[in-house]
Length: 187
Picture 1 (cartoon, rainbow, N blue to C red):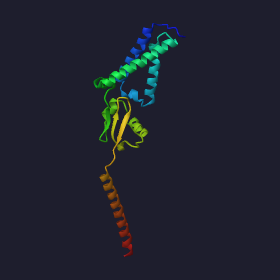
Picture 2 (spheres, rainbow, N blue to C red):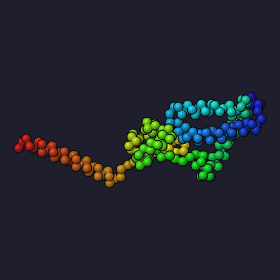
Picture 3 (cartoon, helix red, strand yellow):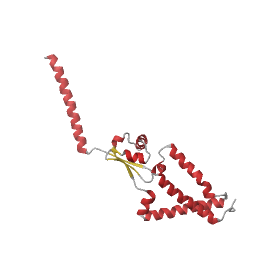
Picture 4 (tube, helix red, strand yellow):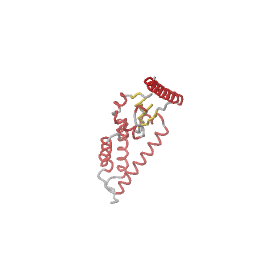
């Protein structure tokens, strides 16, 4: 149970190589894989974890081997995160840049197509954040981590007052028209 079936250096290198491969593969696969926007993406990520399991542990199923592999993954992740955090250029290469999906209220169909995000998926993501319609969205950005950030467009106070006054004038105009219509038959 605790006896290693493989050399300890192999138990350290296997998870590090798989970790590096997955970082590159997920970066190339796009942000959609990280966002888990639909059940297919989630299944792909879960299956990916199971697929690389044997590459990480090899023929060794010992507890010691598993602990060494887990520690190797955590150390590799710590080193990479610290390195990426301190180097902005490397961060942009590894994580990518945010992609605008909606800009100034206009949906960027080309970006949606490039990221393989359908309009209904974008609408669903907006609704999960309490936005009932994409017409309310000023800006939507697909972040490098796969989340979509929405900025709702709010009318400025002057515009709101102007629209309220126009609505009141329209109501008054309808009342005047109704009063005139009622007054004509009586005259």
